[in-house]
Image 1 (cartoon, rainbow, N blue to C red):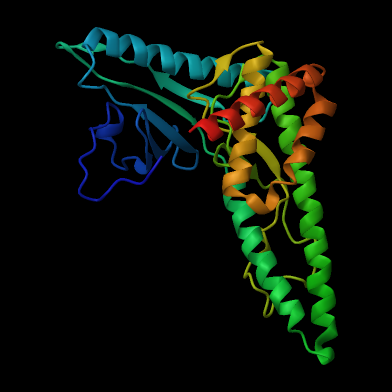
Image 2 (image 1 turned 120 degrees about the vertical axis):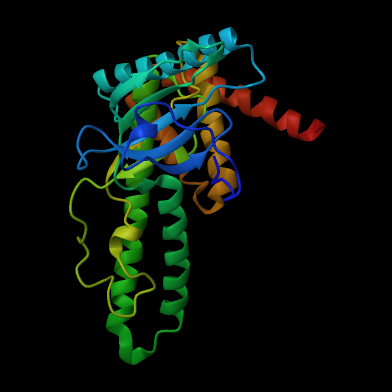
Length: 298
């Protein structure tokens, strides 16, 4: 998804959002859906609105049918995941598409807002901080050995947190596959890291002249929340689950090459947490082989 250009015309939101005194604020714009920040019932209850506008190029009856199916399918999967103990946004409300005056109205779903940032953002910030810290350590003067010790301690703790994060991701995917859900777009942008407690367990390390201003910007502590089930399906096929893992593996290789080796920890945690993992991991090897052949052929 991307942020729209200021001159881009957006479709108007359906009622009641087009009648609100505080209208939703656009977050991202995708080919199939637009995401907005809004609130549910009270201003203090922050939420995300996922609006699927009607498509002018589709026949109105087909458009309504497809939009309704996709909204209901995503909502059912979210409810199922929530019921089975997987961390996903809760569904707050929805309204399926309808056909009125010969045209489709589009449909929407509202889910709870997840505090925190994406795993992609956190890993990228952590990489930047680590590189700056290593340079600072190399340039630290002997009289400032205390600073060197603190940075070294925090780098060690950050790497421990990164390993723990990979384990959490592996367990989350294992649980998702165990209940028969395949995500379909498993990337680090669709994994949120929700702070589970007050940060600050490394007293005195991130302050003063540290390369970052706030530990919460780089800490990898928290709960992994899986988001954006727009392409998800309910499937028990090992091939589908292997492709899910392959998509995430490729995402690590392209977006986080420095953490590509850490992906092995994701697979180890996946293997430990999901009884059917060994068959899926064997199938993953076949998927990799096909992927490499396609890359060679072009």
